Length: 156
Image 1 (cartoon, helix red, strand yellow):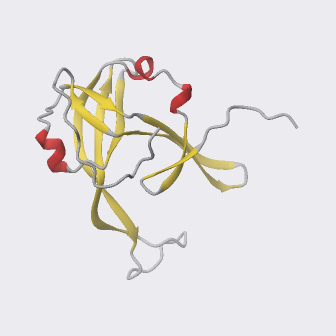
Image 2 (cartoon, rainbow, N blue to C red; image 1 turned 90 degrees about the horizontal axis):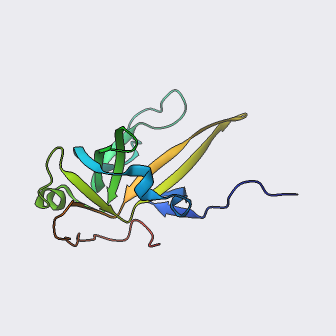
């Protein structure tokens, strides 16, 4: 039987499996100039077994307090919209130390474009793309090495 499409490797990022499609993209042309709009911490969640189940059988989610990274909303000059990236392994303190303010142009290091598909039964699925990066800095600023808590994103 003939295979259709491209084969992308699965990568575990922040504890979840994604298909890493970065190699098939030209990232400079895809995103262009990026400017900061908002940044907020990304917390880890787990099932709250002290609460009754939801109608769909799942448990409500409760924050563990662990910070997995920073979610940043960036304005893309090419996409002409705000897009969300997760900067993996960066704490709010690390991010604040960079001195990046609203509308500052930023540079991302180690960008990963990840595809996910979650079967919903029948022929339906919940699918989309998530954007990750290993680091962020202000454009034109000296490169600052981000401290790594541990490897939450595999190396290329």
